[in-house]
Each structure stands twice: as C-alpha cells, then as structure tokens.
Image 1: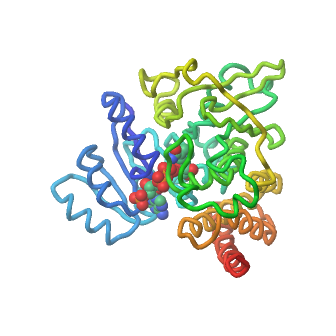
Image 2: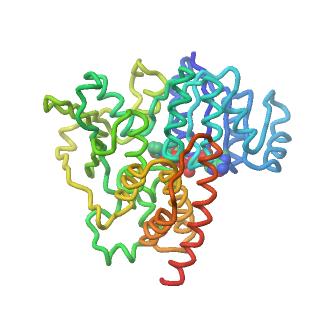
Image 3: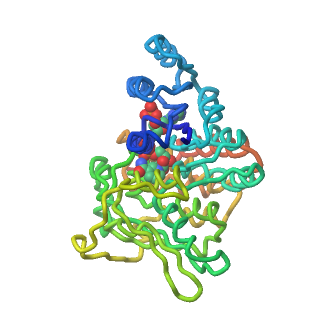
Length: 388
Ligand SMILES: NC(=O)c1ccc[n+]([C@@H]2O[C@H](COP(=O)([O-])OP(=O)(O)OC[C@H]3O[C@@H](n4cnc5c(N)ncnc54)[C@H](OP(=O)(O)O)[C@@H]3O)[C@@H](O)[C@H]2O)c1
C-alpha cells in the first residue's frame, strides 16, 4: 500500500490521480489533499477518500469545510501553511505535485524537504527553480517521477540504454488547435477556440499554453532539469495524433519511442507504481485503426513562445522564472478576454527584455523574480491593450 498526498486534488491531474486510486484501491491510499477554491469538490473527496489532512487556499473556505466535515476526523488547514501540511503529511510516501503555476513551488519544495518522493505534474516548479529543486532532491535522496506524458515517455525510453549513449531527447507536441494557421488568422482566434485542445482534456492554463506552444517550451526546460540534458540536445517535433509521447535518440542512430493513447492516467499510474506497470490503466492502443502517424517541424515564427523558452534556458539563472511568471499573467488576462491570443508572446517578450537574470539560490530568490515579472507583465499588458 502506498500512501499518497495530492497537491491540486480538484484539478484535471488531481481528479485523474483519484481515478487511478479508484481503480487500484488495494495499492493506493489517499492521506492528504490540497485544493484552491473548490470547496464543494474537496468536501466530496474528503467524504470518499477519508484523508487525515486537507487544505484550501482561503481561511474562510477552510472554516466552512471544517464545519461541513465536523463529523469526520480530518484536520483542515488553509493558505501556504496548509499546502505545506499536506505536502509534508507524515504518513505520505509520495506527493503528487499538481497545483498549477508557481503556487506549487513552496509546497513541492516542502515535500522534498520532508523527504517525500514526488510525482511531478507541475512543470512550472522546475522552470522556476529547477536547479535548486533537483539539487535538494539529490541531497535528500528524493526521487522525482515525471507525470507529464512527454517526460514519462522519455523516462521510459531512457531505460532502454545508458545515459552516455543518448544523443538527443525528442519531445512531441500536438501543435495545438491553431497548427498551420497564418499570422492574420491567429490574430482573430477566440478564447473558446484556444480552449478546444484537439487530443487532451486538461486545465485551462495548460490548454492555452498548448495552443501558444509555451507548454512545449516549459517542457523543454523541465526536460533539461529532469534528465540533465543541455538545451541544444532537446528537440521538439510536432506530432498531431499525440500517440508517440516522446522519443530518445541514441548515438548508434536507434530511436526509442513510447506510444499510448492520450490519457493522463497512464503516466500518473506509472509515476505512482514505478517500476511496476498496472493492468488496464489506459485504453489499449489500436495502431491499425489509427493508421497514420505524422511528424513535422514546429512553426517557430508563428508560435514564438517556444523560441522564448529556449532563449530563457540559455540565458539561465532567473530568466526561466521570469518567462513562466510573465506567461502565467498573460494567460490569465487572455482567459479573462482582456488581451488577444497574439498578445501573449508580446507580453512575455517585453518582460524577458526587461529582465537581467540573477542566480536562483533559494526559493525566495525564485519568488522575488516571480513577483517582479508579474508586475512587469501587468505593465506590458497595459501597453498591448493600448496598442490593440
Ligand atoms: N492536465 C493535464 O493533462 C496535465 C498534463 C501534464 C502536466 N500538467 C501540469 O499539471 C499542473 C496542473 O494542471 P491541471 O491541468 O490539473 O490544472 P487545473 O485543472 O487547473 O487544476 C489546478 C489545481 O491547482 C489548484 N490550485 C490552483 N491555484 C492554487 C493555489 N494558489 N493554491 C492551491 N491550489 C491551487 C486548483 O484548485 P481549485 O480548482 O480548487 O481552485 C486545482 O486543484 C500544471 O502545472 C500543468 O502544467 C497537466
């Protein structure tokens, strides 16, 4: 029996993780859950999974949940402190890090410092403080199991050889809903269109990131830290069917790929049960019915966010944290229909141009850049709104 704590239990990854738990109740037990504002769903989860510790963002909401769950032996916390309680819950063996954005950084670091293994979905954590996080994990013997389907695929493909023989990591990207569009078509796309991902059902922020290709850029940075590979040897390949989840190229010319249906329960279950594989987690792959798998280069000109992420990684230090914070702010404004789709890269570019990268030695260093970049992004948003 593995005891699981979930940061972000009410989200897309959180609920898929609970679906995996439902399928294998004799293997996994939920001991702690953290959510943002969705009190109603968290209460349902508390009643069903009986965790010992839970947390919500706001104290008022937490107080409401305490009253509603007065009949249960659950401790309800709030705020950052609450997330830390969930992350470091004593009986947890593994923590699923699936809060969206930089908000996941402090609790994920708390889980690492408490010596918990991490099933990592939140890519922004490694983008913002990758070096720090990986060195803390190494110092404490904490294992990080990737949940992102591409990184789970790479993790699996790397088991076919030895590290020194790897020549490239190849991350696949669906290309998102706007693949193949011209610049003028992109200037008119709507929020509803951006939220219609062709293959995956996910949270709103990552769905927009997939449409701008920033998601792939964040994944390049994530792969750099997870697998210790320099940016020049991480390639992105557009594969619209999302069946080949990623590939590893070895120096003898062999390429090892991992395939499966686009279903996050597969990589989540593998992160929780590694090295075992659980029976029937995802639907079987029927290649004959899919018939065609295609690949193409990404369009870096129309989707500049991918190039910005490579640039940020090359610049190093706090630049990826600035990129990620600027992106979070821009996406939030796009989700509120205050800026256009094509304004998202413009905001990120402006923030990166204004940023002088500094070393990220502590979580506070990362958060300082995050706060600065958010303010800069708000300024850039005012400019793009004036110009639109
Ligand atoms: N969805 C996928 O298929 C997928 C695949 C690969 C990687 N990821 C990564 O996994 C992470 C989560 O993605 P998602 O799609 O599951 O997002 P999501 O559906 O939007 O869920 C986000 C979760 O984080 C919680 N949350 C948000 N802000 C919070 C805060 N300030 N404090 C505490 N909790 C907070 C939300 O709580 P409430 O809803 O209660 O407010 C929710 O439980 C992202 O980093 C994403 O890039 C996702």
